[in-house]
Image (cartoon, rainbow, N blue to C red):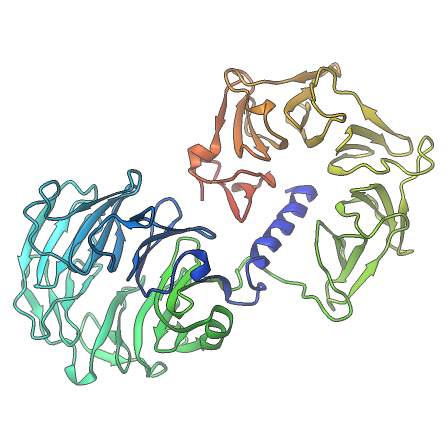
Length: 597
């Protein structure tokens, strides 16, 4: 990753981690309140789909939630589409369907069609006679086991085309069957609030009375990646030994437990009455996040937790209905915190030498001692408080070249002083009053993309404008943003409604789409060569595009990846990943194959 890409990555990652409601050291990252459209109704279940949305089964409808948008799907123009609105569970079937369960009925919800289909209706599984469902479990092949209150177990195919009744359980002394866990070995734990038994998939009892009714109620069953079974009980967290079928209480958690979920590191997050714990089973150690959850998220008592594929924790409860939590990420090795002496507001660029971290900000440059974390701020002669430093590049071991919204500056690290870059032809300073968006440094040669065109500088000489002939613009000036040198040594230049390159003889060749004029309708700000004929093009309003140089065909990577990336902040190539910086997210492909994460 080059310095330019590293600069933008660091800035974007900092913004992503810090912008919501918390610093990187805090747990709570986002809080949803009634003002976000979620209301104050209790959330009974949560699920994720293949599109990155979280679905909420609440007492007042079924909701779809992204990082910043909440939508209720069972209402249309404030009118309910169903005869009921109390949802108790939601489960993903495949990329197109959800199983949504209310107090009295089960529904197949079609995500694409935004349509509900009731189980037991003439149109969908008329043989279904169980009414409401109380629990579900996903089989290894993606099919779903469904448990009804009266104890009937069904199997639903993943594509929702077949439903089969498997067996009927005996009457429950508690009135209804509502506990189901499919073990990794294929056996089933089935029960009610005071009863638990082990069954095979043919409905035969292997062991009954696994739960001691004297311990009160239990609320949920969970099997982790090490195949340990955890039972959240009224008086604590229990572990069920699958060999001896013996129950033992976890001595560190003698509290009422509602549910358990495992993170990617094998640790357990335990929802208890009035709080949230992180339990390290190997160390038998707990960490409480009760105070953070209450003070930062406004959740007095959590009741549900969901850990999504990105490791984010979605927690619901009383008070504010929903919050997103995230621990300090493992890749974050160090952090800089503001202190009373130096207030670092906005960081536009980052550079580093052996001893210091340098941050380009508004009106000046910060120097952070990497050992002591002590910070100093330096003001440059001629740089106004409202001017921003977009790039920091080494012009020599002792000097930085600073590209700003008001021209080029030189900063002497030893003298701790900065001034405009003066050249023989620009004694008042180079690129005064011009915003420099991008920099390409090649030895003694420099290329600058600005809001007044493309410029070239050979150290020791003057900064000269490079004409881009035949580029049509409706503005008085030509805005240039993207700069890239490909494997064939062509210099690519992108900007406001154009993309092109300089060929071997120095002539500029503009490129256009074969049957797509998208390059003439947006700002091209990022360029990356994938192979000899394919290029990734990052734009300001049209997302990520792929351009075929041989055929001039253009296709949308946003559509191919099914992501929303209207504006591309950066695109870079690493050993294992191609990474794209989008608003509020990082996207890209892993191991150079086309898929998105």
